Length: 183
Image (cartoon, rainbow, N blue to C red):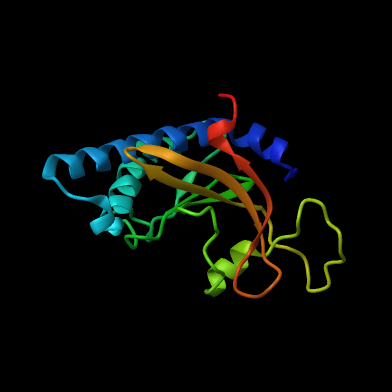
C-alpha cells in the first residue's frame, strides 16, 4: 500500500470530497442556528463543533453502504444509536486507510496523551530515514483530516499523515492543504 501524498489523494479523492462537502454543510447549519438564536459560537465552541460533526456524520452515512471500498464509521458503539462522546470527532475506515476527522484551529494534531492516540500515530514515515527498532508499524495508513471554520465557511481542511516518535506531540510526516487542491 502506497502512503505518499499523491497515492493517498488519488485513492481517497471521492471520500475526501464527500467529507469536505459534509463539513461545509455542517458549518453552514451551525452558523445558521447560532445566527437564528443570536448566539456567539465563541461562547460555546463545543456546541458549534458538535453541530458540525453531527450534521457531517448524517451526510456521510450513505458512504457506509459502499462506494469503491466498504467504509465504516466508528462513533462510539456498534449500534449507531449512541453517537459517541461529543468531541470524539469522526473516524472513517477504508480497506487501506483510517482517517480521523478533528477540529483544529492551529493545524496541530491532538497530543498523544492516550494509548489509542499513540497507537494511531505510531507508523513509519513515508521517507524512512532510520531503522525501525521497536517492531513493525501498525497495518494500514493512519491519517488526520484537520478542519476549522470562520464566519460560516471552512477556513482549514488539511490532510495530515502523523508520525509519533515519543513525547507528547506527534509530527506531520506530510501535510496537504485540501482547500488549495484542484477539485
